[in-house]
Image (cartoon, rainbow, N blue to C red; front, side, top):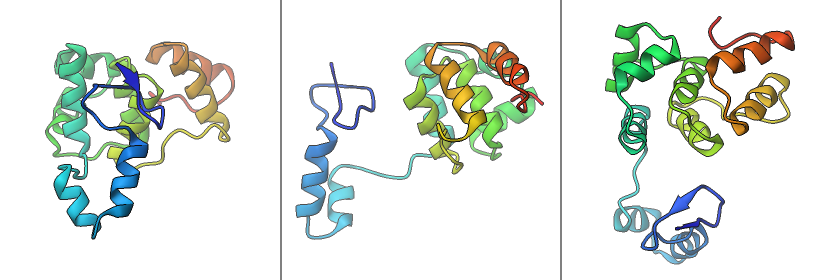
Length: 152
């Protein structure tokens, strides 16, 4: 498996590169023709969360517990019944061991801002995710640098 042209992680050999898709989109008669041909839809947070669970071989109950999120609220997020805050999405991403790309995709699917390296708090979180740190370690680093923790 290679990386796609946007550096967005592994891709199967059958999956077209982002550059190839962009060229195809530009040459399509309408954007709808392109999106229909490639079955491109809006990715909901619950769909992406559940896909990540399956891909990573995780159990929802374990992730919700590791994220420190109320069990009922956590299940509602996974079912698409509740919209979590940005920090709750980050807690879930950390509990799932998501990399930077997966974390930003989760944030985008949740309709919130992706991590931004020019924001001090986000920079700390980005740094920690890149090094594979868990939620407790991220919160320790945020506290150490006098930033709001995720679990606060």
